[in-house]
Length: 425
Ligand code: PLP
Image (tube, rainbow, N blue to C red; front, side, top):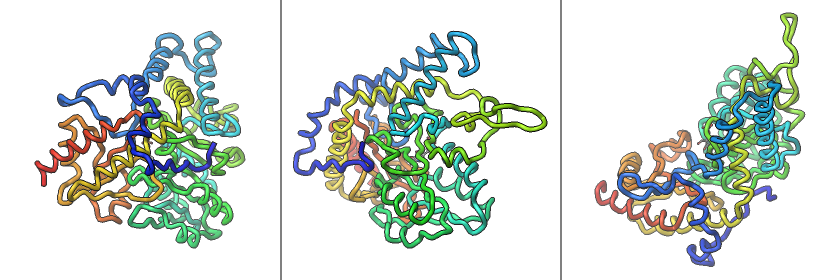
């Protein structure tokens, strides 16, 4: 597995030729939600950065669990509980092999990327940070990779500083190198920016941070759905993501962590499952991963994510990634022909996210008019207000592509945009 995504260069071939190698129509038939009309038009779903759609096998795995196996895990002395536990723990092992974690015990279930980061900030941060310590995040981070650090920094007397990002959305690695010193304890960066699409050089960030004695948390929310991620090759200390952006259900997330760091961290929440023994004289805690999993977990969610991973493992992922890059390139070519359209996020190494504004038009108005034509996009600051403020923008329109999108979807986006422009400009 690669430590960084390959750059799938498609410029030498017309985009449509590349797509022929990936059977997008067959893949689309796996996603029942896509075959519907919205506002009288066939749905064009381009909001994959917010959440991805679910293949039939994921929907069926969750329904099957509730229909046939529903029970609580780990504690029942009966067949249903055994089945639920096998499905739940089997899913953890699938996640471990999906991200090449050395051991499934290093894969913790959370409610999502947001909770995974809050867990690390609260548990590691509260037990480790000292006054004067520094936490570095990039200026393009999602709020969920800024605010938990600000909260724990305020409590511990530490600071949160932003690694600069230039006008294209590229991280300033030279500035990053000069910011590092012995007081930097944590570097928290997104693998892919949800607002700009930038793919950050995570392996290099880890190398530099480790040389300075800092840990690295990688927010992989926008990466795992696009190419195979290998946490050992990245050498990061924590890697976090949400199931719902990986074709699985909402309400479930993953926190991968380096074993010795997780073992040294205190529990995040108290309750059932996370204990070894409880008495009023003193309570002792369970081993990994259960130390961090208080209460009844999202069993159906884990089983659904396991099914999503099975689906992805059976997919031609390299073909899917090439197809997404071809869609992005095609969309960028079309965008260049639209008067008054400005792309936001033009880094050379990008995932399939097209952020833009129409000069003089509020992004929310564009989104509404696109929706009326059956085209679903995201508008606003994308929970990345600092980078929008830096660019003096209230927000952007964001079309984010997945492997089940087609070139016709891109055509429909630009046809709808043309109509929206006639109405708004
Ligand atoms: N990080 C990034 C880069 C994201 O794009 C998102 C969601 O859009 C999150 C974190 C938060 O994910 P969740 O809301 O699933 O916890």
